[in-house]
Length: 421
Image (cartoon, rainbow, N blue to C red; front, side, top):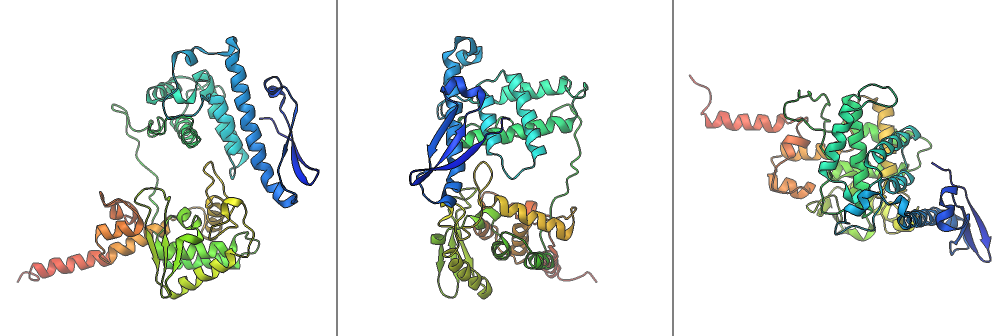
């Protein structure tokens, strides 16, 4: 990867960014430097807009290089002449181009992780002969999986381990999700790498050793809050405190809380409601009610603070927590604060802790199961489809359900007329 140098300078009243074009693009664009006006006289605003402008320039460079390659008869591969672009996708993008964009977008991960992604993508690019990503289907993914199983690693000269092959498939599955997010592949097509390395007929079944995470307890939630409020140097200390309390009271997903906008919140005096939209699933769009006095006071305070702080970006102007930096390929506001919560949880409870931030949701479902709330009402509250009950089978499986089990045995004992004489 070429390290790109960029610099801000003032041209007239507004700031501009100077972008040094990497050498491999000189022939495609016909220039070695690109200057792009940012349209602002504020230095802080220019620093924020700079990254968006650089990303737009790099996207233009990739497109220019692709068009230049298509104009050259020597660089048009056989695959590009034999396949057509599927309906519902953007302009043809090759594996190398999509990989470059994804790695540029990757943030919040270590350099070692990014290097691992690069190695997997480079290997897949060589195998596929850098075809258009829209041409990748389940059959092609299966053929690549079989190739990994029978070929030797260039680093070790030995056959790849099942763990290494699984890492390849997981990375490529994430790569495909990014391509779909960017519109490079058919939006209705299933992820060809998803679950492809599952148990195959005739092969030895590998016993699942991963322990299912359990719901969080009240003591653990309070200890986490204490760790948040006693730690110094936390960038999102007030937001983290509010988010944890809301996770406990609502059973929402972390990103649902972090993505709350002020216009979704209605204060009814004795309670506050959230109108969740654009969530993970269609059933996830639902109404949430805060009925506790302390939680209502917390939201009212957060609403006032949100009007006084400086948002981290224009996309955050309407958020309840506008200071949260967005991250990941889909720019989620929960990206960095989620990592901060995970790091603090690990420091407080140890690395082998059996619960995570999603365990607040598991705890809410367990509480509703113990309270005897019907399946349809539980699903309505937590945003699940009523087609199936995953409360006990997934969320509450590792929870403490002694209350409902004891009540069931009491019913059984009564129906039996007591013990036999």
